[in-house]
Amino acid sequence: MSNINVKICSYITEEWLLPWIKEGKSQSSFAIKHNVDESTVRKIKARNEYRIPVETLNRICEAKGIKLSEFFKLAGL
Image 1 (spheres, rainbow, N blue to C red):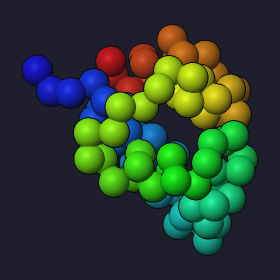
Image 2: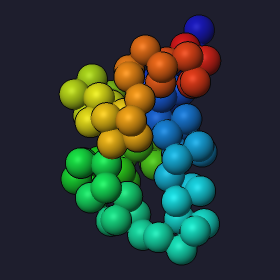
Image 3: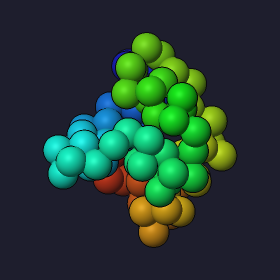
Image 4: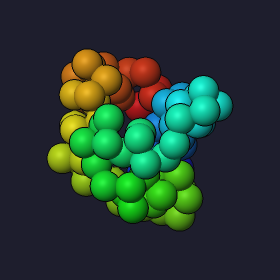
């Protein structure tokens, strides 16, 4: 069984962060828009077994306009 934190961070990075950056937006603006610190975005992107707090995931989901339950379905968890 693979680590759920890795799956969560991978989903956020691949589906939300990298497309954001490909649009020419910064990692810093992603952090501001999603109500988290830029250092948190770096940790998520690094995928080094970052244990993302539920509160942080919830803030990101709220900024995306989705519920946590919807996030877990999207991420296949």
